[in-house]
Each structure stands twice: as C-alpha cells, then as structure tokens.
Amino acid sequence: MSETNDRPYHHGDLRRALIDTALAMLAANQNWAFTLREVARRTGVSHAAPYKHFRDREMLLRELASIGFVRLGETMTEAMSPARPSTRAQFVAAAQACIAFACQNPGLYRLMFSSDADKTIDPQLHATAMSTFGILVGLLERGQCDGSFRPVAVNALAAASWAQVHGLAMLAISHQLLEEKVGPAPVPAALDVLLDGMCCPD
Image (cartoon, rainbow, N blue to C red):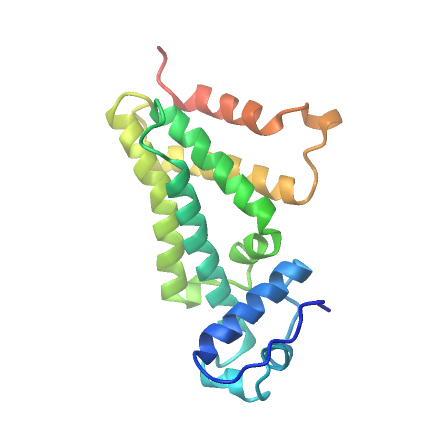
C-alpha cells in the first residue's frame, strides 16, 4: 500500500481531512485500491468515523473525482490566457495543460474517467464534469464566432477535441508516446493535425 504518513487528527473539518488523506494516498499509489478503513487509520480517526460523511468507499471516490474535474477546469482556464494571440493558441494551451494535468496527477485523472466515478448515479459529479467540459465547448463556440473554427455542429468539434486530447493524455500517463512510434514531439504534432481539420482555411 501507500507510504503516505499517518496523519493524526485532533479536531476540525473531518470530511476535509479524510479527503486530503485519500488524495494523498491516490497520488502516492496512483490507484484507488484503498479502503475506507485504511483512509480512517491514516487520518487518525476511528474506523467508523468516515461513515459520518461517506456512506461507502464509492461515495468518497466520486468526491475525489469531482475535485479532480474542478482542478482540471481551473488548470484549463488559467492556460487560456486572453493575452494569447488567437483562439487556436488558446486551444493548444488548454489541451497541453490538460495533458500536463494528467501526467502530474495520473491516479486522479484515471479515476475521473473510470467506472468507479459513475456520473450516472451522482448528479453533482455529473454537473461538475459537464462544467469542465463546458470550458472546451465555450472555447470552440468563441472560435466559431471569430472565424477560427469551422461552422459545423459544435458538439462534433467537442467530440473530436475531447477524443484526441483525452487519448493523448491516457497514452502519456501510460508512457506509450514513444519516439520510435510517434516521433520526438507527438503532442504538438497531433494537435496541429487536429486543428488543421477543425480550423477554417485562411
């Protein structure tokens, strides 16, 4: 299991303490094979304490995934600086930021898109994930308005973008973007190909 240090808990926000411990374990192990009992022990509380806030392990995992989507959205938004010279440049920056987020948080990123973060049974998680996805959609809509992106259904552009960027992120965190397979700079090259298909001709 994780080498994360036990965190003696004395008072304060128990829910936050449990979440922080679980996030640390997820980062250390890059998986979510831990139990609520283990999270409680490492937080320094009784085995029953987590159940005051999370009825089961799956509820805690969905909370972690929700935090991941919030952080990913913040990362993408920060990358899309208005100072960037074009909508295309903002798209590239947001895509690269998403892939970097995945590489820096591989366990969390995998959890966010796993069946253990089931959005169909958790409306709040679904709404949070859709809010982050909405950042991409908003960027594409602005690009269509300024003539950068082709005037096709925006959900088609979003699907193509998401498939490409998410696929690159998953390949990156699995160390599969090998130079002998995809060249020395696969991410910029793949994004250029994607954007050549999405952007209006000059």
